Image 1 (cartoon, rainbow, N blue to C red):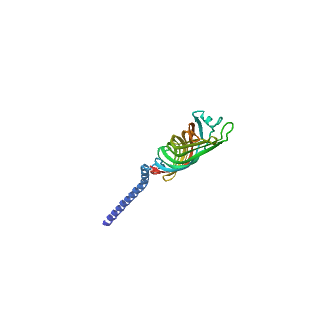
Image 2 (cartoon, one colour):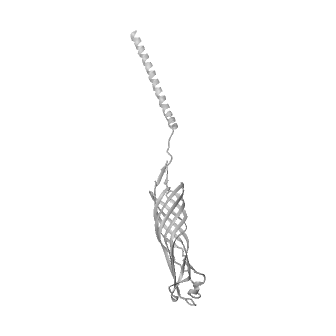
Image 3 (cartoon, one colour):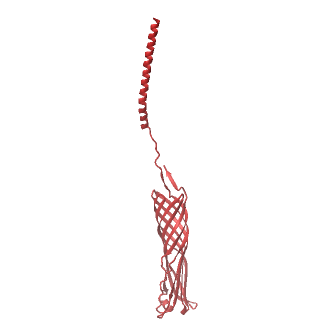
Length: 291
């Protein structure tokens, strides 16, 4: 009886163990089916954090300094004369004498430095202010030889004018496309203007000599383009029109070395155009990448 009972007990234990193994395997199978779905749900619901795309571009805002060199040509206003008091010149130099207009065609090279400040007020718009000063070789002269005849005496006439230096203070407003700036500009202009004329009538031993040098004030306007080619460096090409108004010079007549109570007023208009290239260095970071 002991053997039978033991066998029965062993058989019962085996059955219980088998049932437990089967239950455990079923539990594992359920977990394997449910776990991927739960993980997928967690992956979908998990929050994601993405940095916004960087905004990369050239920042024009800042102070800059630079230099420039270019070429200028004056509009040929020449020198126009009026006698003072009126009518005295014809009497002094012969009846029928006409004093012609004499052009000077001033032109030459100029160069100097500039400094300014830009504000990039919007992604594609810029305003700024700039000042510059240039040494100028813009000058010209003219000669007219009047042969005389018909009661008039032979006449030699020479005139000259020069712009020794030019300075401007201008505002700038432009459109920005990353490293390219296209702008208009305008403001005040200042310059040292020299004028001279010499009129002689050898037959009468008479001369009229006038010289004047003055600092003139006027206006300037133009347009240009600037490109930031590397780091903080940029190059520009600019056209400007300047107008410094007119200068009037009175010169008495000398006859045989004696100063006469009459003479001539010579009036010269100083204006022209300039095209120059410049190089600028801007202080501050050249390129920004904002997140």
